[in-house]
Image 1 (cartoon, helix red, strand yellow):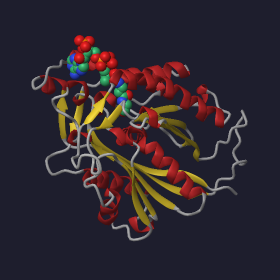
Image 2 (cartoon, helix red, strand yellow):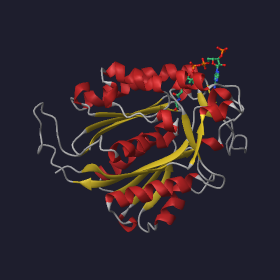
Image 3 (cartoon, protein in one colour):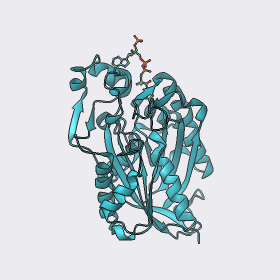
Image 4 (tube, protein in one colour):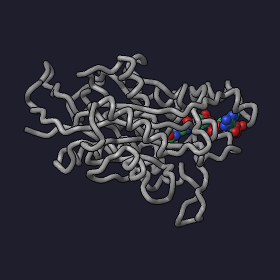
Length: 332
Ligand code: UT7
């Protein structure tokens, strides 16, 4: 028997306030036409004053636990992927742990910017596979509205706030039990995760502040065109790596759930895979880029509206500051 990490529930939360492109263009030098044609974004949700990353994360985690029908007392690890913690320390994960009433195990934050959820997925999968954890809550939550320079039109139109969460549990699927026609394992759970980073490119997307350097929080800075160029190359490579590692082909994918940064990047990855657009979950038009939250938000939407079903093969991928990038292949 080999231990598999199964995703047994998901949940998400978006702040109430919706800000349209029209509202932004009344304040800064931009247009709905520019934003939609360059990014596909039409609106974003922004956290209210006094609403923090921990609040968003807590609500998403609470919903995921309810969906999984798992009491917080059973959770032995909580991982929060975020770049916008409430405070420099303690880890925002510990605040969420306390609010959920989780009394066992450990909680920590993971910082891989927009790839944070995939990094968290890899960590959770390995904690489960080694037997160190049995039930994990993995959250991606960010409030980028707090670190955006609202005077910089090249970045401020791109981001939104939100949170998404999944519950993972150790399942003892026999990898040889459900072998399908093409020899693929049909069993439920995470098939593999793949992570990369390239620190030499960390000046392409970063925040110009921090506790050790400036003692200020700082603002997001991005060389958009270069990040775009790296994204289309790295994401095509990582989806290929994930499929090859499992002896799968693009046509085996039921759903591509990409990090939602720019519709043009999403389309480019789908096109390179030869995947029809109907097999890709898209939320960037309504959520904008919610960083670590974008994949679990998209997952939750597609599970809830019945697109992603038990047995489907789901491929997730992301790229973000670092640069970091990664993918996870899951049999739902
Ligand atoms: O999640 C992490 C990963 N992040 C990403 O994947 C983002 C990757 N990058 C991108 O998605 C795109 O590069 C952007 C959407 C950020 C920008 O699109 P672009 O086609 O690369 O535009 P650009 O930065 O080359 O700017 C083109 C023009 C410039 O004007 P000039 O110099 O050509 O006269 C900008 O000043 O568009 C101008 N511009 C804007 N105009 C209206 C930049 N931002 C805006 C704006 N409204 N908001």
